[in-house]
Length: 592
Image 1: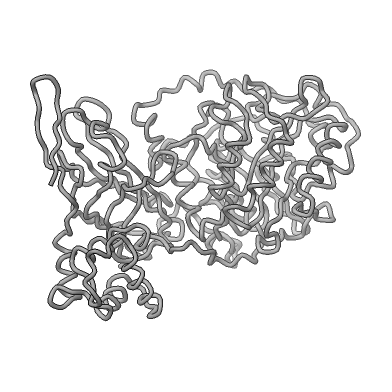
Image 2: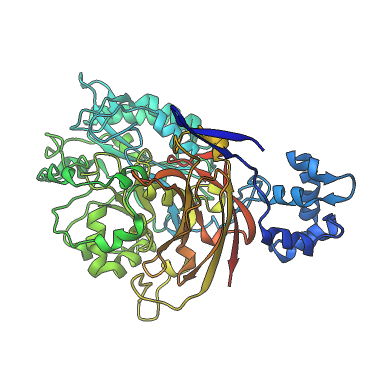
């Protein structure tokens, strides 16, 4: 057992590093499912069925044999079975004992219309940082596609000489990137992570001449990958299965851009002055409080794609011009211009489907009195939600406001790390990480009196999730000795809870384990769930700091419907959502 020194000058303290040891409950389980200190294949099969809840005989034997080939094989007695050390290392291996199905596999019905799915959606997908002065690039687009994002947004503007097309956040100091570079990268990387369709939402500020140039670029770049509908509208959207390995263009018909009325520029300077706590800078807004902070907002709104999403408008957008027919022909999913009031926006035409866009605060306002109308609309039509203009730091909002009301495209700044984005990443770990998650049936059905799901209503508890946090390890491998504290080993605690409908959302906290790189908690929590279909399990590890803000030590977010029961190794991620090499928690999940 090695030792480490902490301190400075003449003051030093030594600490034992230690190794992870099996908790008492794990030892008791081993005794139950072993004989003479050895767990045979027969014992292992019983454990997998009775504790882990897995039943396939062939796969269990394969798993047992695969353990021999892992690094833990030194704890595998010759031709007999596992020792307690080998059993513990198996349980604590995130690759062979993960909390979600592995390898990832698409298992939802993918033959329903697009409107029946939550779709992994990006906002201003080309920006590398903030919304006002960062660079535009194809690199964030590539990264998003590799993470499973299926909706990419491009804002198209004329270049300085008006003879080519740039992708840039108009009216800001952001630097542009050539459209053709973005298109080529999308073609190359679109289906690396998932073979289900990629949707390009285009914000168009172009003349007909440049629209024709875009049409040629898009057609020549994507070729047969491009989906052409053959008609101006659908009576029902096609399915993700039908659209496999296809790229769809979604925007408003150009004529609606060119005839849109001038809109007052929104004044957002005051919103930039909102105070942000030190914890929010490191972790993001605490999502369980967002619903309580929602206020009715009286805003002047129009389609997010009719003008720059910060309220800026092309000077010539009110002039009628001819529209390039080839460009219009490329639009597979038409976005509708909103007219009238909320009830008018959410009108469901039985003969054709459409897509509309709402800012986050407009949705918050709409669902107060028209939540049922939003859900009825999203049964057949697509609803895209995008961040308010004051989020110049590329932060995000609670996605649950949209998801609870059936919104398919909750558009996020993928470079805006924090709790909201972790929720987004958590939901789309479901269904094999393919970027499409089937909405629960209750968001797709109406009752005999045309009633729909009400997320504000308190329902009966369907099931209770029990989560036990045993032990954590890996920080000493992935962090420097003094990353958390120069005077002593870290003091870790875990926050664990549920993000979902308001009555399910809660966070709990373990005790703090002082001066341990390998902390043991052995604490259990119970979470009653009224709507488990929409629930996400949140896990955060903090390092307690008496004199300053607590340090970030890892996080993950997991879709509750896909959690594997039993004792599981839960890999933790950094703030971007990338898994650490070594950091993980040993946990137990039970549904009662």
